[in-house]
Amino acid sequence: MKYQDKIIQVEGIITEVHDVGISIDLKGRLGVLKVPMRMVISDYPLKVGQTVAWQLSFIEQVGPEVNEKYVSNLDVLKRRQNEWLKKQNNAEED
Image (cartoon, rainbow, N blue to C red; front, side, top):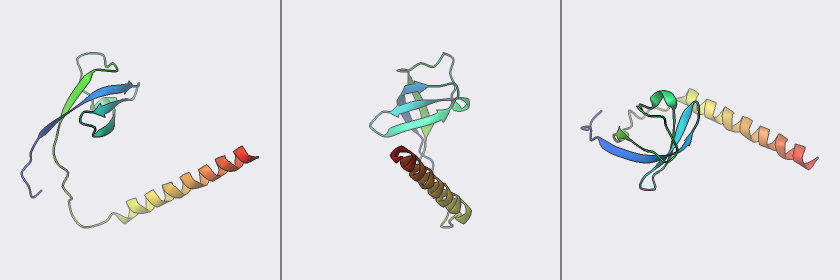
């Protein structure tokens, strides 16, 4: 990493609680974050509407190399999803 780390506190509100994870609506209209329960530290039962916070830094690109296997897997996933959607649409038309 080339740059000094600048830690930022990010806050959000819990919008969903499930057995395996939670969804958080980020303050400042930054979007939604879904995390597994194993990543959450809490002394209290988690409930919708509670505020959570965590430390975040900036994302820095590690290098110019592209992971071709990962890109290939994404292409396969997209192709399978499109095929599945076509099958679903055809089944609905019949």
